[in-house]
Structures are given as C-alpha cells and as structure tokens.
Length: 334
Ligand code: AHG
Ligand code: MN
Ligand code: MN
Image (tube, rainbow, N blue to C red):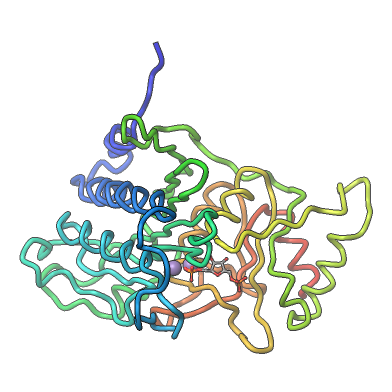
C-alpha cells in the first residue's frame, strides 16, 4: 500500500519539535496552505477566465501595474490569516502599509507577523509560465494587547520562525522550513492535498546553472560582469561553460537551483543601487530556506539574514544558491 503524508499530518507531527508551542504556528502554516490551494485554483484558470490583464487603474506601491491575480492572491492570503486568528500583522508587497489584524476581534491574541509576496513573477501569468508565493513568519515582540510597532515587523531574517514558498508550476508545490531543514510537498489535485514529496531537501554544494537577467549586463558592477565571463569560459574540471537559466519568477528560478544546484543573482545596478528584490518578503524567506538546505545567501557584502531592516519594502542585492557558487561570485566582487 502506498503511504501518503499530507502537509496537515506532517505539520502536526513536527509540532513535537517545539514542545512548548501550543499549535499556533502549526495552525498558521495550515491556513497558508489552504489559501495557497485557493490561489492555485485561480492561477490554473488564468488562461480561461477574464481575470487576466491589469486591474483597471490599480497600481502597487512601486507604481507597477497590478495584475488582477496579484490582488486576488493578496486578498486570499490576508483573509485566510485574518480568519485563522494566529496572525496579528501582515506586510504584503501589494499593500503600502502593513495590515493590522488585531482589530478584528478574532486575532486579538495573535502572536505572529507574516510578510508575504502573494504573487511572485506576476508578469509571467499571461504567458503560462510558473509563478509563486513567498512568505516569512516572525513572532511578535510586543505583548498581546499592545500596539504593533516597527520592532515587531522589522526583525532580522535570522529571527524568522518559519518561511516558505509555493510554486504554481507544472505541478504546484509548497516548500517550507521552520529552521529544522526544508521539506517540499506536491499538490495532488485529485485529493486536493499537499503531499510530502521532497523530504529534507538539500541544495547541491555546487552546480552548473547561473540565473541572472543578462539584459542588464551593461549596468552591472564590474565584478558581476567578470563572473558572467567566467561562467561562459571553457574548463573541463569545473564543467564550464555553465548553463544560463532565467525565468523571471524568483520562486521558479530558486526552486530549480535548489533541486539542481546553481546560483541566482539580482545585483545592484547604477540605476538601482539596492537591486530590485525586496528584503522582507522575497530575499529573507528565500535565504532562510536556502541556508536551511545547506546553501548560502549574500548581498555581495553581507549575509542577507543578518541585515537589520529599515523599512517594509526595502530592496537588497541578492546572490543566493549553492555555497561554492555564491563564494565564487563573492571572490569576483571583493
Ligand atoms: P513580482 O512579480 O513579485 O514583482 O516579482 C518579480 C521579481 C522576481 O520574481 C524576479 O526574479 C524579478 O522580479 C525579475 O525581474 P527582472 O524582470 O528585472 O529580471
Ligand atoms: Mn516578487
Ligand atoms: Mn509579487
């Protein structure tokens, strides 16, 4: 008989890793899993229904066009977190200010903060290419009943209690960590459950894939330009030339590199001195997962997880992936 372990069963089993926990984090993770299934259903239908295209005049805090599914995903996750009652504050890419949930009576005792990119890679929806969701969970520092302050939601990545992503790809997967390794679950649409398919995921120490938007080459720091040339040189011992793979959905690029080995780079450019990707709901959660899988994540100068955030929508340069490949990039930069 085939034995299947669902995400729900796995989360309950793992609660034993936290003997003093009361199951609140488990419930929070379960709520995120449920919202993910709802978003997945809509993402799968994207080519069918009139949900495609931009959402009228709605633009997000960065002045980018918001696609309808960005808005939909944002609403679904926030509403799941609100009704679940374990989350007191959500910081979302799609909301300029964080959303305080403690006013809604149900969340008044909630202890957790969630930072989320509800739909990552949204420009890929219209062309049927993988997109994702990225989330990060912190324990609030203020006491229950007190106001939520910056100390609660601007914590360093090292203080994350859990982080994960969902990839809506050729199959839909949820990958997460609570700081004790990384586990991946594939959605079985026939039973509507995420099933443990990738236990204890480890990123290869090195690989042959580099992922960077080379269209920006001319604006890259010299060290990155030199690294790209290094990737393209022939060398049997290090399996070069490497392969270039860039999807444009961070989740999808990271997921492939996690499985196959590789390095993902979104550097600073002259025009964007902090790069493009956001610390709180893109780089921190992904860095936590990659480090937990044995990889490395750096801005080029510092370990991403050690950065002290100064604002919710802060951007940081990112070099994330197989340890030896990240180290090689750093050699070129320093
Ligand atoms: P989002 O859709 O949430 O705004 O994120 C898009 C991000 C990330 O997923 C991707 O790696 C990167 O932007 C791609 O940017 P470029 O098109 O500049 O390469
Ligand atoms: Mn994103
Ligand atoms: Mn997004």
